[in-house]
Length: 431
Image (cartoon, rainbow, N blue to C red; front, side, top):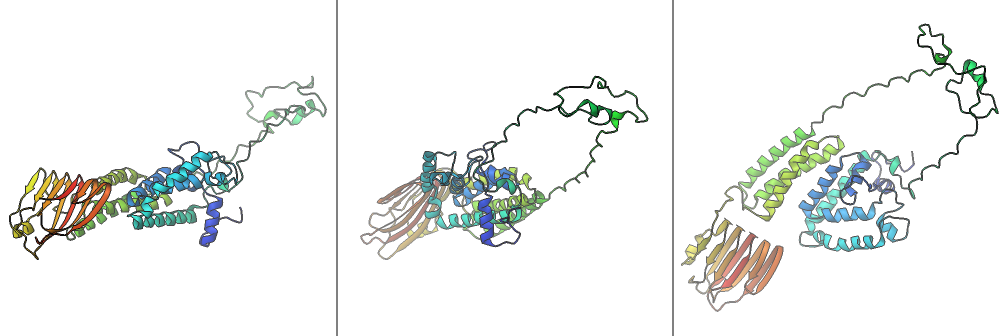
C-alpha cells in the first residue's frame, strides 16, 4: 500500500494528510441531495442513513448541520472529477460543478454560518468540534476501509480500449492429446485437420478413458464458509441506557424548575445519537433509526412550543384575564398559561414611590398582553420563540427574538417584568 496509509495511533498530522488524500467522493447514484452523506458512508463502510441522521442532529442541536453539509459539498469531489468544487473554482483541476454553482454555495455559507456567529454561537462551535472529533475517530478506526479506491488521483482511469480481433488460429476447446495436431502454426483461423474431426464426449464413460476428460481442469476448491455474523446488541444496550438517562433526567427536572420537557427529550435523543455513532463502528444500531426520528421530532416541537417546567408543566388552556387590585395580590398571582390568550392588567395597581413589583408572565401557545401603570417606572424583558413583540416603545419579530426596554416614571413605583411566549405575540403597554 501507499506510504501515506493511515496507521493506528498515528499522529494528527499524518491522519489529516491521509484523510485528505483518501477523502470521500460524492457518488452520482444513490444520493438524496449532493451525495455528501452517501459518500462518507461508502468511504468508511457504514450506513449512509446514520450519516444523514448525524447531519439532522447537528442541525437540531446547534443549527450547524446545513453549514457542515455545504462545506462537504464544496470540499468533497464528485465521483469521476479530478478535484472538488472549490478547487475547481481555483483552476486546480476539472470539476463537474460549475463556477456559478460553486459561487452560489459560497454565498449560502453566509446565512448558514449564523448558527456559529449568531446568538447561539457557543453551542454551534461545540457541535462543530464534536463533528470534527467524530470524523477524526471514524478515519482512525475505519480509514483502511475502501482506502485504495479513494486515493486522490487526477481523475478516474479511463476504461481500457478493446483489443483488436485476433488474426491467429482460434484456440481449441480441448487443446491436448490427438487434437493438438489440428492446429499447426501458421494455419488459417478455423482450419481443421481432415483426419481429426472434433468428437463429442461419450455419454457413458465409467472408467474415464475418454481423452476429453483427461485434461479438464479440476473443480475449484470450495472456500471456507464465513461464519454467521453475531447479532449486534448495540440497539438493546442503547435503548436501555436511553430509558435510564430519561428517568434520571425526569428526576432531576422535578427538582430543578429550569429543566423543561425539551431538556429531558434532548437527553434521550443524545443517548440515541451516541448509540448510533458507536453502532456505525460495530456494524449495528440500525434499529435505533426509527426510534430517533420521532424523538428528534418531539425535541423540535417541545423546543418551539414550551410547556414549562417538569412536572407541573401544564398551566391550563383557554383565555385568562387577571386584574389585581393590590400589590400583594399581584405578587401572589400565578400568571402562566399553556394554551390560550393571557391578559394581565396592572394599570390600576396603587404603586407608591419606592415600591417595586417583579413578575414573570408566561404563555406557551397563544398571545400575552400586559398593561402597566401610566406613571410607573418600567423595566421589561419580552421574548417569543415564534411571533411578534411589542415591548413599550420597542418592536421585534421572527424566530427566538428577545427585547429589553426601560422607561422612567413620574413617581408611581417600579414594575419589573419578564414576559414570554412560545408561539404567539407579546405586548406590553401602559394603561
